[in-house]
Image (cartoon, rainbow, N blue to C red):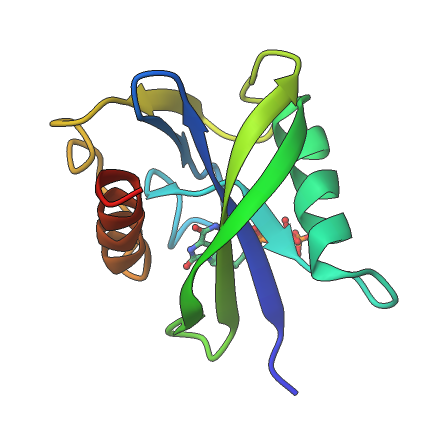
Length: 130
Ligand SMILES: Nc1nc2c([nH]c(=O)n2[C@H]2C[C@H](O)[C@@H](COP(=O)(O)OP(=O)(O)OP(=O)(O)O)O2)c(=O)[nH]1
């Protein structure tokens, strides 16, 4: 079975979307992604998403609709993405180099990881069409 990576497209007022800049590994460092990570054994995808956002950003999230299906990553992992909102706390870059809230018109202003560009397009479409 493929390794499943879960990620959150965290949306705030004004249709701003949170992007996070990876610190490692060297091949991915500097690229921008949606906060998340691998699902641990025995953990649900929802639990993993909530845990990763707590660890990486220091926030509690509310998980919303799924965005797309399985996004295949170059290394064979499978990426699954959900819309989310911050339920409590303010996101901080605990494990990333930087965070950016991207407003409409800024969604493509960061160097998204290769797999994340079509995800951002799908997120934009979901926000635009409700
Ligand atoms: N979190 C996240 N990972 C992504 C995205 N796009 C993408 O290609 N990836 C890749 C990068 C990594 O190869 C993998 C996620 O691994 P990770 O290092 O974030 O996982 P993790 O937090 O569980 O880390 P670790 O415990 O294994 O160190 O998925 C994305 O939007 N978010």
